[in-house]
Length: 341
Ligand code: F6P
Image 1: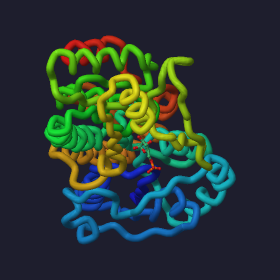
Image 2: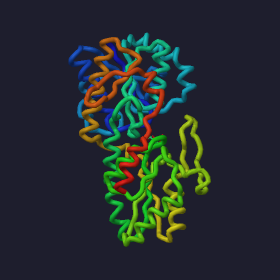
Image 3: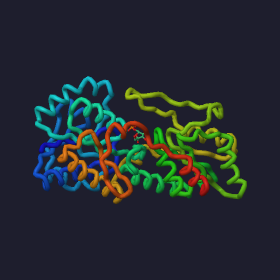
Image 4: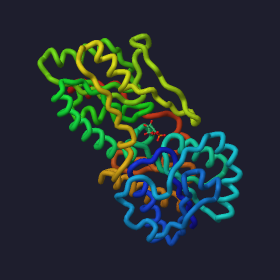
């Protein structure tokens, strides 16, 4: 069999572990040939690829990023490129393509599958917002990075009696904010799923100072928003891919809280540090299992599906189901966190 692999969209710790696992399972166990397209779908559309053998994937398990490179491609570019992609798949004699990516990549994967290409997807995102899998690799690493940052920020916040508003990634969902906030013992968490009331938030933080505490940490998912009319808010803009370019929840919140509380407040934006560096052991294992199962699915001819974690099992779910909806933070999960803030 000849398999093509690509990594697309925002990178994520664990991508290299999937690539390595695909190569090991396919080349060593099945005697397949594997090629990797450079820079995501762009590589498939431009027929830009490299051969992936054991040497090519040696030593990459613990490395962050992706040895293949990644890029974002606009949906219109992909739609117009389907015929070109099909031509390259035929020319290269590919029997399967394994795109590894998040929401946008999986939508593109479905588009390619619907056009007749032999696709087996692998989900990835630090945001953990793919609904049909219990967890995506990258999430555990990102939560670990954010938690460590929050732990560190507490000491400086306390020294200066400040409120620190820490912005973590999470465009549509607040999973990183929820988990890192719980793990680090933050004092308030705001997520996109629950628009917040600025007065309630200020009251909550204020009570802490009134009780004699010297600092407060507020964790804000980047996509969190105030309740309509609760405060002036700059939502930002959309970029060329239709993705939000947020104006900065941490900056806006810290100004509002400082005014209301009379305490110094500072924004801290963790940004891409959450996506960089070595994956945790959990993410390496999950990524490795996804790679193994993607190759098996390709050999069974199970196309139009992607790997998913359900409990402790890896299962295959249809790409159509995978892209239907996002996994948002449910009310009861938020309440569990709220109780310990
Ligand atoms: O999709 C993962 C994600 O980390 C989002 O939480 C964040 O909004 C986005 O990527 C940032 O992507 P970019 O690398 O394009 O700035």
